[in-house]
Length: 101
Image (cartoon, rainbow, N blue to C red):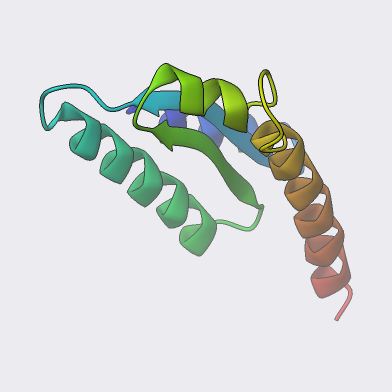
């Protein structure tokens, strides 16, 4: 997940917005916390410093079952990837409206 902000920034040169997707599953070491914080901070910085929206669609879960549920593969927890896509569409629309002000 460390590479997500870099990749998103490069993609922003060619798109109206970007969704960062992935799953970070907690293990037995503090690595989970470092990765989640770095990815979140990187995406937040892109939004604060840039002109195009970047949506954080990274699942941060305690286990694989939670990730599968949130990805819409099992259970009825919805589909966080689809929700991120809808959020990006809305943010792109708002961005275009702001540009006309």
